[in-house]
Amino acid sequence: MDAETIEKLRQMLGVPIDKVEETGDELLVHIPKAQVAKAIGSSGSVVRSAELILKKKLTIKESTSQ
Image 1 (tube, rainbow, N blue to C red):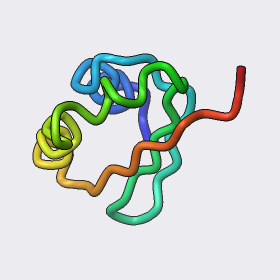
Image 2: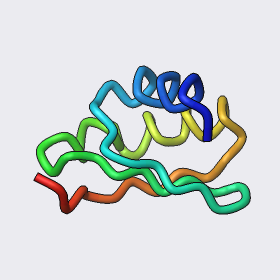
Image 3: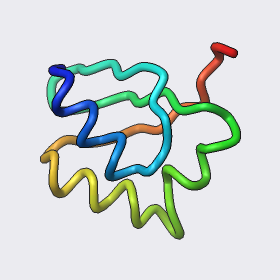
Image 4: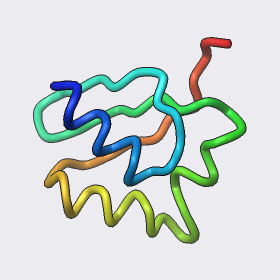
């Protein structure tokens, strides 16, 4: 995944991104623990919006790195 797309994703989610793993049409996005709820949004609204724009399924995962 290119840096421009990761930056766009960071702006859409509104949180720092530790790592992105891409598998086909799916993205596993690692987010700091304190930011997971913000990245998902109310009832998943932020994730759904980002999925529509990127045309990929997003999975938000709590980052294990400190």
